[in-house]
Length: 197
Figure: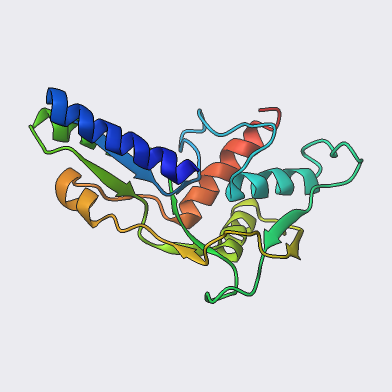
């Protein structure tokens, strides 16, 4: 549903341009993770839905830096499926740092100001990371081991989803500065300093 809603928005923007000449840019994100390198802005949600944030919450709880859950036990992270046709059996996704996305937003506005054509652009690193690689990066950033359990696959999860960002590179000058290790380091620094959100 999420993907369809994004596509419908892009179709509506194209119709707007066809009828009224309004140029537009749609930015398609990979999986966003990491935090402001200066430690000012980060993700604080009571129920996160992103892998890296779940991992950070789990690490903080297991280290005794966050309260126990409502059952009085430490958080155990679930990994859904370890039998995919990938390098370690877990799903592969394209992760991207919010600072790289912020730079892309500025570049998109500059593109439109220069008279650039409307269009949709993928924003990721073009480097897929497995679930276990993300967890390892989080462990390295925290200097602690994660507790996780392997569960059955979730219905509908694709084995691999990596974005082709070549159009964004050519048209917007898009490139990333943050790799997975840096994403995890910035996320850990922010979460550790903002345990209460």
